Length: 402
Image (tube, rainbow, N blue to C red; front, side, top):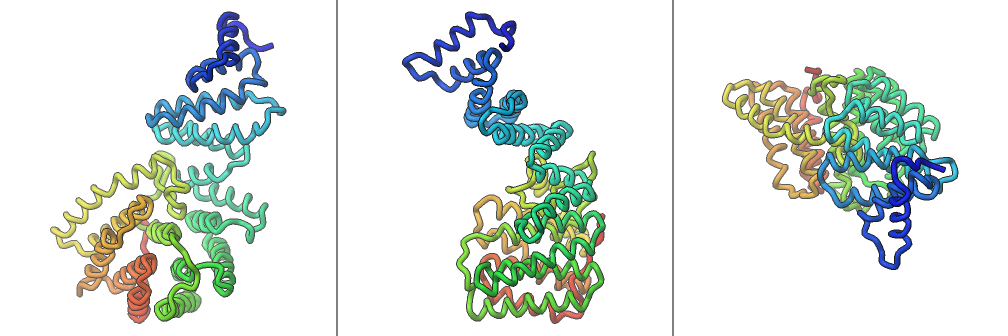
């Protein structure tokens, strides 16, 4: 049984003696023994080999070593027979680690192939994200739709529905996206009435929903959504948040980034981009996360140059792109001092107040700052900014793709 050519009988005997000895072998020693014995007794030792490889990966930070360890674990897990306990879960763990480090080391085509394998094993969301990163939004939306529909849309998590709506919208299926997002808002309204979900999160969703309605040209419904958000902000300013929450910044920053997607270049398989609408920590591929945050210095230099040139429209657009990235870094770093991020939003408002700025830019900048102030629980200031934005003659502008 098994392959006796790769390892000699002496190697097999030494491996068995090591594991049966009175002294506990080290992880490295056990791993070497499992490699030998998995060839001659795969049913017994392949699961142990996979577990040991994943455990061994915790000892390293080098992406290339991690890719190799998870790749070996994936190869071993693919050899499981149907009787291996928790075999599917072990396979998913190995494949998840493998695709992560393939993408982290620039092997995107191989990483996508492993994501496809993961989807066949039941973990389809990573494939949807990778497709979206490559601009294949229609395929990603179809994947979300197929799996969310199978679970019933009302049972899907709020994150899944935000992602699904984002991909439908990016694929040009705007009415379908509005339908998904409307159900998300309705669900949050019901929970908010029963004090089972924070009002702040509902305000962020309403603001995003209003932006989608504006893009669709449904101005009356857009105005209704914004005034509903304003009323909630007034309640928060008066009474505070009825639901205790410690950190729901992830919702705010994800929806902020999603609102900035039209100002970004169009993603393609040869030039992938982060999946706006997915939280960076909980969904972005490692190469996309690194690229996004690495772009901050270049954007800072660009905004400095635009200040010098006097190109106010270009400066306003670049400064907002920079603010979105700073907000993503601020939220995902865990260091969330208000004073480290507020100047970016204050500058956006100051630039938009200049006499030569586009009238719609001020409404956008005030709304952005309002949603940030809501995130840091400055409810009165958030209400004031949002009220001013609504009183302006122009709604937040629709940003065209570059």
